[in-house]
Length: 260
Length: 259
Ligand SMILES: Nc1ncnc2c1ncn2[C@@H]1O[C@H](COP(=O)(O)OP(=O)(O)OP(=O)(O)O)[C@@H](O)[C@H]1O
Ligand SMILES: [Mg+2]
Image (cartoon, rainbow over all chains, first blue to last red; front, side):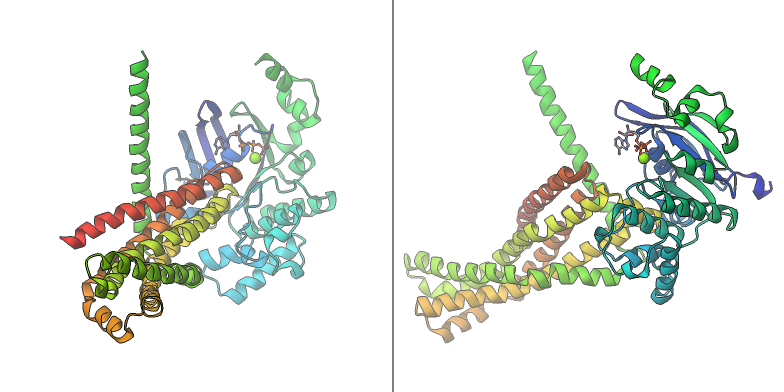
């Protein structure tokens, strides 16, 4: 089979339950190589859990996850590290290492996983920081001294610095001003269009979703309720999507809530 | 029905206890595997040795000097009841080197080091820093757990050696200054009675205790969940379980060296 025909990320029948809380009930997703998928959905609908399952940080109850055609559920040791080295991840809470300075955070993947010399890694880290609008003057600060939006951007710089093939962003523009959101959107688009990376982004920001997504998927009740090209989302005819993107108070989301 | 409920509760507690032992053993096995396979993070290990060893010197030194001094006074009081005052030096050095040096230093470090490790790793867990580490293709067992375990296992014997010397000095000071015993005689009896096995058994204990201290800190920190409260609980659990295990293994090791 030609490698271009194998989706970069493919998830089938992903289930995950926490106690009595069935969070994922059969997620199916596919992202082609060099494409960008945006996941939207209500708060608490399992978007972050889906990403963490793909990264192997949460063990799914059942389902298959393939990265570049290779089944990755249950991988461990060196083979797990090899597939993780292809992926860059921005966590919802940035998750910067507070025992290190900002630039050491950004350079971490370059130094530890790639074995790059420290001086060269610092230069690359500063370049990545510049891309997300962080000044070199904060490079030696501790992450705790940064504002929430700056931490988010430092987390973003850490994810992109090793130039991974696959990028996961959990709410990259949350907490940023509109101008900075625009910069980050452009950055993600550039990574995907120009560098050929594959991206999976979670966001609540519909403008951002339209800008960076080749396609958009809505998670609802543990499944993908709708998935399609981002330019078709306005006339998709799916009532949940319709309520979500137009931020209406009344609609199927609220009706389901009341029925429960 | 009440009896059954009672039995059910006991049963559940017992099963829970077995489950947590199993969990801990798995964690330990996992840790040991990563302890002996590359990559090794020597720089971090060295930094941990400084943190665990060097910065614990004052507290361990103070503990040792007072313990040695008190020991000398008490043995003198006890010894005088059957005219054995002259054994003060011998008893001080043997109890210090074989028993009190390792155990007291380890208990002080359980409070100081286990808690710090649990709080640090626990905070990294609940703020997703451990997840971030994993996604940067760095194994947290190698990067976080192994350096702390190696550092504590190597450092504690060194600390205990220093504690032994300071403790004997404390006993010497109390004996010569307070009890008016002859300094030369005291020193000679101390050195004459000491055997190599006293020192090696004490230092072996210290290495085991160091391992337990770091293991409990890492285990409870690594498995903590639920925000600041969870980290607080992990810290307490680390100190309590490290202390209990130190006393338990102290008996097991003493029994082993005894036979
Ligand atoms: N480690 C965990 N243990 C127990 N429950 C969890 C855990 N992680 C997530 N959950 C539950 O899974 C559900 C989905 O969580 P998730 O973080 O994926 O939401 P989300 O879609 O990312 O929401 P948001 O947009 O607010 O970030 C929530 O109900 C949450 O309580
Ligand atoms: Mg989330």
